[in-house]
Length: 358
Image 1 (cartoon, rainbow, N blue to C red):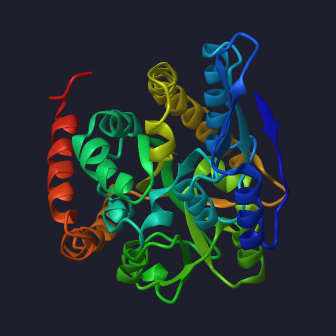
Image 2: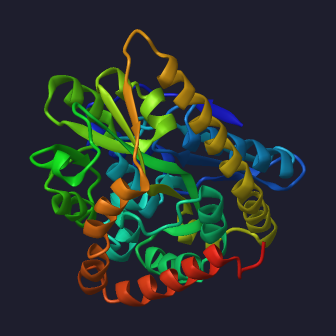
């Protein structure tokens, strides 16, 4: 496997055009010396080396290379190497890249039903239970996945990067603290509406611009898993972090469907097997990084961060404002939104009661 790293690029549209012309969208080379096809593919992520998505993609690529006896080689790209999050989704759709890790929050205007992951206090609080739900859910892995496939994105798996927490230039422990608070959000109308319900002023922004925006005071805060907050140094330009566990950051391992469906069955089998293997691997990876990097934030004396963990009573105050957003989602986020939400809520109830298989 070959690893390729890039710095930040200013002209993402130009980068997309260069990738298209260079790659040709095929990803398949001539047969090797033994007569078997060899493959050169691209796997793009929304994170950087050392962060969950990138490390996942590296391990995924290594395993495929080993399973195929070197026939499959994947270039893994850090975030920004091929443009913004939106650019990367477009490249996946048009075949400029074969694989991508995609956050549904950046596809909310494309597959409206994918905004279900912007509903706060919906998924189980226990990350291990959420991990089980994401692996087993028919609402997600069949119903929602089918909608993405219609848009040129085939989800192979949904997985957790950990619970999301808030950081801010002021303490955030009750909804009133969000009044007038300029909250960075992904490009999801529902995500923006969720923070408007708290009284915040949501601001759509790429992760690539976020550190500078918080440093300069253009935005007041953001949400992310702990590992991303620490590794992106957000805690250095934010004085407060709230352990709110208000949501789970869900990622999708995705592939271009035309590319995938045209592959030989044995190659598809290797991919499917690797996807299954990476389910537990990704959970262990995010758990380790989130635990270790929380300690790093707590022990940082150069740029100390005041950390507050919400009580259940405090979380209930936010939950009361968040739950009504489910009705809005069902009525305004695509014709299948209501059915998917209803099925998912039933699955959540089952998995939390321990009725599904372990």
